[in-house]
Image: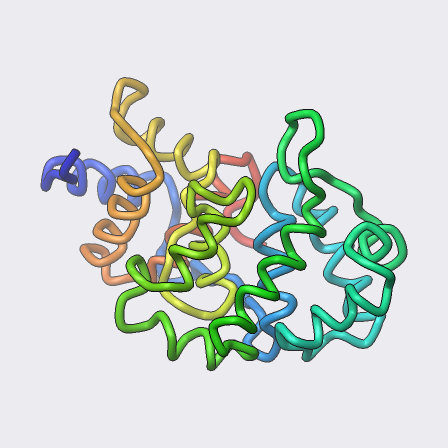
Amino acid sequence: MTVTDAEIKTLVTYCETNLGDPTVWTTPDGYPNSLALCIIDSIYSTGSHYSSVVNVIERYKESGGENDGAQALTRSIKEAGGAREWATTIAHNLKPANTRPGAQLKAEIIEQAAGLMTELGIDTVPDLRSKVEDNPLDNDVMRKWKRLPSQSSGVTYNYLLILAGMPSVKPDRMILRFLAHALGEETELDGRRAVELITETAKTMNVDPRALDHIAWRAASGRELTD
């Protein structure tokens, strides 16, 4: 379903009324020096309290991985004895990728994602950006990432781009909730429409899509709008 001018106008009005001064909106810091941290955060972020994701990130940094690329992440997992051991001894997080019985661990998906990057000749954040910037939503990285177990929605791929400093939108349940509140619960929404709605609204408001995504997520999750 195509995004309409009326929807964008409604969203702009809703944002101006409910989200405060756009000049003080912030974008996530991301990890410009570590593709490993981008991968870890993006995969662990779904279905989790973000504090638990922060804990995983801090533990990985403490292991010496603050500036790791994809290859170093793969080595870290291998040296730990595999994804499950890495999840136990480094991440201290054995959360599965979904709630179905027998689901792979998020750590196992991270291992596959790191391998995917290496397969595509990507090791650093600049490598990733150079591969996808021309067409962020239609490229080999996106297609292969969405084939990873439990990643077909593209939510974690979009978040990966945000963490890498690109103007993307993470269409998770909080963003969908925000859009439903703004446009009406009967509005037809899916991940692709959510990305387009936030992106076009940000363009109309002359703000970074990452900033609108971030403030909308905070609003929908009941957090203070600014730190």
